[in-house]
Image (cartoon, rainbow, N blue to C red; front, side):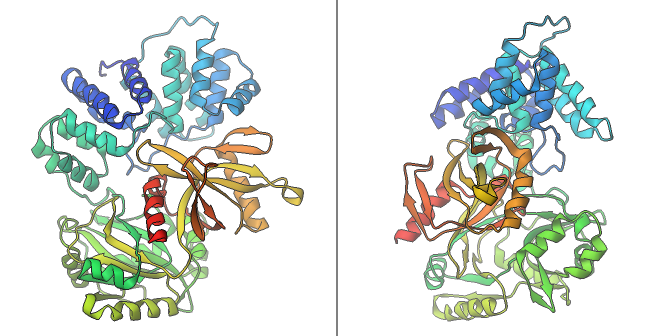
Length: 558
């Protein structure tokens, strides 16, 4: 067990949280990482995860499964405090971490077995909760929490709770941490950034950085370990996009679930955009892809759509398939699926850093198309023949698809990046993917439901979510009821008619115009917002950002 005390990490949290300056945050983190390398290098991986407020890396399917109610129960048992009192405090304060600190600070009970916490002890106890299953699992998890809270100083207890709830609130985005790792180990930021993109594991990047720059450079994409998807910006128009990109792969944009399919050691796994493993829900897609590509290690990317009579149907049907855990065979008959492949990131060796044109050629070589698996419909276009992209767009819409994509044929695959190498063009009102952070109960017959939701975007500079708009239009009574039931587990606090939610559920919202507003933290709002759908296919790391809002505002005003 390593020797770094947990209070040392907590002091770093506090220093970082106390300064609004991004460069100062970077320097504090860099100094802390250098100290860890000198005194306790074995814990670099875990320290880097904890600096992100995580226990497991983002590609991992593991989760603690500790609810706010279980935290309240643990504190109640430790302090002899009524759970209702704690819940009322939470309703007024909103931050379970601050409540935990206050309660532990005011604890009058004498603890005879209090021992200083180490980083290793905290992360070990929290990881053990993931392994617990069965009828008495909550009691066992409770005991692991009690062991930590019993030995924790008040300030330590605050950050234990914040780590569990995944709301560290120190204002550090992943870009700041990437910069801190580069500075701490004196390695070029681009080298760190590349390694992180291809491994999707900043802890592993930092660990390698303690060894050598060569070790960092050797990190690459690996079948079985999903990486974040490359993201698209909005296209200002068909001709404008092609004029800027020059030589463009234009392809149909499908209205389905984007999937990353990994085949390794004879096994196939399917991951969504949010890196959720949905293999068991889509057994026929496993069969389709294994029949289409030889039994080699590979990673391909594509879109799974729902069909009826061979034609695409609503996105919501594919969500039913992805979420289904039981009666899969029945759903296979009710909601047939088709797979369109458009990229290959690994085939016998990494290909993600090859130009897209070369990756597309490889995809065409290795895929045997069928009624169930096809390559995306595409055209190679230039400013001279941009009309072919217009024809593809019209054909795609008539065929029931969502629009078209423009991709720079020379570009490598850039995991998690939203750049101008990939653009999307759709014929509908613009949309944003926003996370629910608050709600208001309805009136009249809707008084039992959350009648509208407060939606927020992610601010990459501060690492926080900033409010943008209240939205209610687009939800019928059935959706209102379902959403109200679903949001219960994410309630942080309630005050009269308003509710604060833990960021977890994402909505796609269409709008007519972005306008300035002093009412919301982002400084803007949306005119005529309408909820289009729940985005269960993406994760919090793919919520649209304040930077994207500004980009869309520029497009709007251009």
